[in-house]
Image (tube, rainbow, N blue to C red; front, side, top):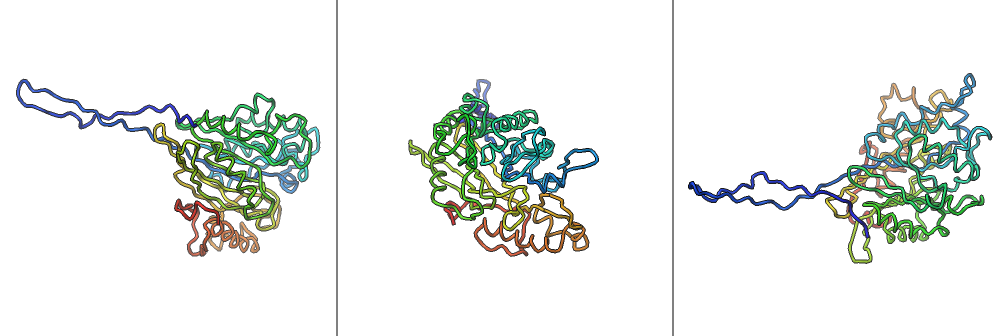
Length: 403
C-alpha cells in the first residue's frame, strides 16, 4: 500500500470571525473551516529511444579537431522538453569509451560528447535497461553509469551492485515522491555476468521491486523495454506484463523497444484492498532519435503528463498530451544532418522558407507523419486542416481500452 506523502494541511480563518453579541459583554466565537489539503502537481516530458547510429556520429565528427559535435540534434524540440518537472527517456546505447572503436548496430558505443547534448536538452531521468545495455560488456555498462553520474542525470535499470539494484530510484518534485523502476526483456543474447547488473523480465523479481517502490513513494513509474520490433499493435503477452506491473503498484508505464509508436490508454486499477486508482500506459514511445529513417520508424512523439495529488490521497494522472515529432536525416542540401523536429513546426513553415530547411520529399513525408501519429494515437482521422502543435489525449471511457 502506498504511503502518500507527508503533506501539511492548511487552515484558512479568513471570514470566520462570527459576531454573536453587540453589548459590552459581547463574545466572539471563532470557527475554523475544514482543513484544505495541499494539491501538488508534477509535470513530465517523456520521449522514446535515444540512439546513435554510425550515420549520426559520422555526421557529428569534425576532422579538424578530432571531436564529435551533436549539439544541433535537439535544438528544434528543446522547447517541448523545457519547463517540465521531469524529462525522461530511454538511453539505448552505451558510453564504452574511446579506447575501443565507436560503433552502432549491433553493438552501440557512442562518443561521450553525445551525453553533453542529452544533458543540454534537459533530461533528468534515463532508463538504461534495454537490449543494448551489454553492448560494450560489463565495463561499458558500468562506465555508462559513471558518465551519467558525472552529467548529473539520474538513471535506473542497470546497476553496479546488488544493493543498488534493490534500491529504487526515487526523485522528489514539488513535494511529491516519484519512484522509477526499469527492466528489459533481454540483452540480444549477450551474457550478463552478474545478475545485479540489469533488471531482466522473467529473471529479476519485478513484482518485489515495484512493491518496494510502491511502499516508498507517492507515484511509481515503470519503464519496461518490451514488445516486438516494428509492430504498431500490442500482443496479449505484453498486456499481461503491463497488468502485472499495475497489480504490483505501478501508476504509469512508459514502454519502449518496438522503435515505432504503439497505442496508449488510461487504466482503472483496483488494488487488493478494493481501492481504485488511475493509471496510464503507452506500450511504445517509438524512436526519439536514430538513423532508422524508413517509415514509420522516423515518426514519434514527445509525451506530456500532468500528475496531481491532493493531500495524502493517491496521485491522479490529470492530463496527457503529445507533440508529434520527426527525425530529419538530411537537410535541404541533401547532406546528412540529424535533427528532431516538431511536425507542426515544419508543416506550418512559410513556403518561401520551407525548402531552405526541407527536401521536397521530406515535406511529403511529414504529411504522412502527422497521420501516423495524431490519427493513430487518437484513433480517428485528423485532417490537416485541424492540425495542432500538441494534442490532448481525452480522458473518457473510450480511451480506457485498447483500440
